[in-house]
Every structure is written in structure tokens, then in C-alpha cells.
Image (cartoon, rainbow, N blue to C red):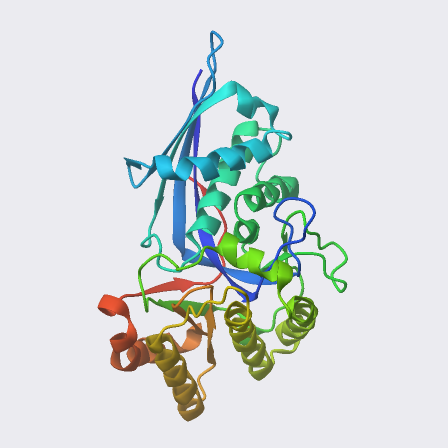
Length: 344
């Protein structure tokens, strides 16, 4: 008999960046990272499985926004093969996967994180060994999501997702992300993210290719050490509510990510002139108003404006009056932070 399940999963934005993979294993991070999920920027995936009969070979079909996408199949099939050793029934079923994002694909929002987070949640639910109330359900979802996209493993928790072995959090691991369970000061709760779409095209270099650049990078080891220091300081700011320290870490981490790209061989400049203009506007406005806000970047041109949600109205006015000219077609997307996969 056919079975189906449907999950919605949020994207996430890293505060301390994952950039670079270990040589051993599959999708294991060279440094620890931590992120906030973006509750309003989601992928929704419906997975339908049917048993293989009469010696058939299992098949996979993938649809994005109701359009079949054969170009996505290699990545999906690789993902399923990686998960099969733990979920042997995968090789005995046909798969039809229907996915859609509530944000434009290729806009620099982590669509692969949301997509693979939803896929992994569907697989764990279909497997049926654990209930959602069991933490193992989400550990498995995180582990399986990692096998599709490294950053996806951080999208399955409402709390900040911490991924990678970190000496100050004993339960941390490279295999899956864990929810950060420590105290978070009220100063750093209820923040929001406004994603300024500076450029809505595909990135000039894929994340996979970008990670690979660190294998021979002259500054890779220094970057990995700095990520540990950044994470330690960021967790300290969570506890103390030191917003200035939080801002310095988040912005420095974003710039370090791009510095690594610009100093690799081959090298890439992914920021655009409007990226720089928007960042300088954010700095100027913060200095003038003292509103708690900062920018961060993924490996692309778009700017994530993180801000204390208590200042939402002022920030919306700031975006519409000063930042909109730097957004392609005047496009920006807003989200609360926090949120986890939801079964639909």
C-alpha cells in the first residue's frame, strides 16, 4: 500500500558559520556552527512511497512547485542512498516527492536546508520507530538532513541549532545538530530577520564548491580555530545579554566567510555593490538610533538584517525608506526566528 506524509520545515541563518568539511565521513563540519531557524521561510514537502513489486527497480520522481525537476534527481537519489543503510526499506520503495518553498528559489535563502530538513522529517515519520515527542526522532531527522545538506541539520529545532564538536558543549557532535538548551537573555530573544534580496539569481559558486575551496586554503586552520572562539563568545553573549558582543561576532563571522571566498584559489567576490551599500546603511542607522540590529550574510550577495523584534515598526520604516533601493525589484522577506518542522 502507498504511504504518504507531509512536513513543513524552516530555513535557518547561521550566526557562527559552517564553512569547510572534514576529509573523512560524509558532510562532517570542519568547525562548529550555530544558527537560528527562520519560522516564516519554509519548504513544504509531501513524500509518497509505494512498494517495489515484481522485480521492479525503485524509482524516484521529484517535483518543485508542481513541476517535475529531473535536474534535482541526482542530489535526491544520492541523499536517499546515504540514508538507506539506516532505513533499509528505502531500497524497496518508489518515491514521489513534491516540494515547494514559500520564498523564491535561488534568492540566497537556505532552500536546501529547509528542503532536506523537510525530506528528513518525512523519512523519520514514515519509518515509524519514534514519536515526535521522542528527542531521538529529531536527532535522526537532523542526522539524515545533514546527509543531504550540511546546514539542513540545524533546521529541525525551535532552539538555536548547534552543530559540530565543540569543547564547551559535551553533547555536541558532528553527526547531527543539537538544540542549544542553555539560558538565553531576554535581550537576545524575539529577534527577527529581514532578508534583503540584493540579487535574486543563482549563486556564482555552489556551497559544495565553496566548501571544497578550503581543502587547500592558506588560512583554513586559522578560520577553524576562530570559529571555536566565536562560538564560545556568542554563547557567552546569550547568557549575559551583551548585545554589542553578539553583534560583533555575527558581523565578523559573515565577513570572515566572504574573506575566505575572496582569498581562495580560485577566488570569488560574492558581495555586490548594493550589498556593501546596504551594510553601510545598517551601520549608520544603528549608530544613530542605537536600535539593536546587525547584518549577516550567507555565501551570496543578499543581506540578512537581524534585529530585536521590539523595534519591528522602526525597522520596517528603515527598510522601506532607506534600504529598498538596494533590493532587486524592491524585494525583501521577513521572518521571526525560531520554529521547527511541522507535520501537515
